[in-house]
Image (cartoon, rainbow, N blue to C red; front, side):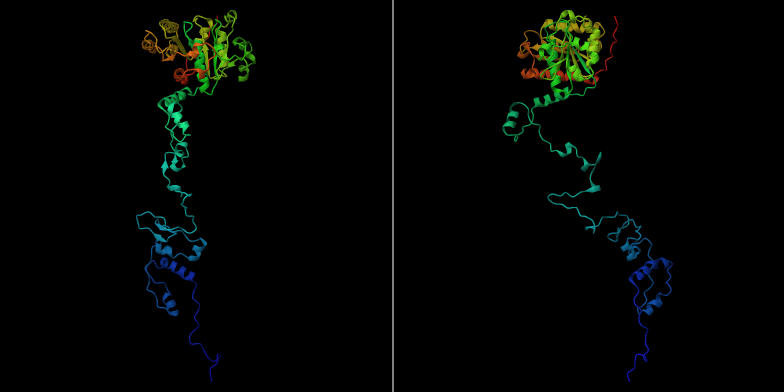
Length: 455
């Protein structure tokens, strides 16, 4: 008879299922901590004999912070993100390897799973992030100024054969600007110096016919055409001044009408109703044409006029008469920031201009003389036997600067002045004169004003 299942008794008990991997790993992970004294944990030999595997020799305990200990972290905890982070300074958790002692940890050689790899190609530039070179104001790659982004290029020429070549080639051939163009650009930059407040310039000379009115118009037109602020010229000549004849006349109003309606002037458009404006944007406030009425234009009237105009204009030029002892002249000298001493290229013109400086020094205006500019006007290519170099040296020793203006047929006409009709030499000299005067803009309002003495 074959034995039945009821009669058969098992020789060996059925083997139990192996413990989960997590339990084994967890046990192994805790083993070093419990065996740090070198003892073998109890029950380890019995468990190995029961499972039919030979017992392993006792392992030497590893340090708590060693890579070996970290590598035995519970995999289930690592999957959940609960695993404790290694405390070893050189260990990289993404690669599982420790750096040699004393060396810095290096990033992994290959791409890291889950992170975007910078692309490089024809249209993509890989970023450098925190490894970008540092500049004085931060990362150099973050500087988006025009100097960093624009390629250096030559300035297009403005005159001469360079300009013709540039225009003829459609801009393909650019020889760059000439030395004259560069010098002109620097003068224009000086003319456009910032100006805070109102700068007042007076044109003086004891001799008539030397070109004070012409100088007032041409200098004012140069300022108005190059600067963005407002420029006005005031006719303070008591003997029927001709300043209003140098630009197209837009109104018959005079400085007397402006003073009469001064209480109603609130904005620039109110003042504009009493002035005429030329093509260069220079405005002119005319004087009375009747000498009997203009004699009443006193020091008080001039001060009131300038006080009103300085609220709306940045540059005020005053065309003065030849009489330095006139009542209005004291007001002109007391409020002026600088002077233009106008002289002709003749001996009597130079003597009259020098006498003007002598009178100013004698009457307490030495500080104003030191800030003045001498202008030698109507200089021809052949000035006869007059040594203009010695004349220039004489005024240079007393004034801040000396400028020569060449003779120009358009100015000799005595009609309305247009800058476009002047010769290139005259325009260049006027630009140099304007730049020289503008060099003193930084001291606008710094001169001590004399109080008005009531009479």
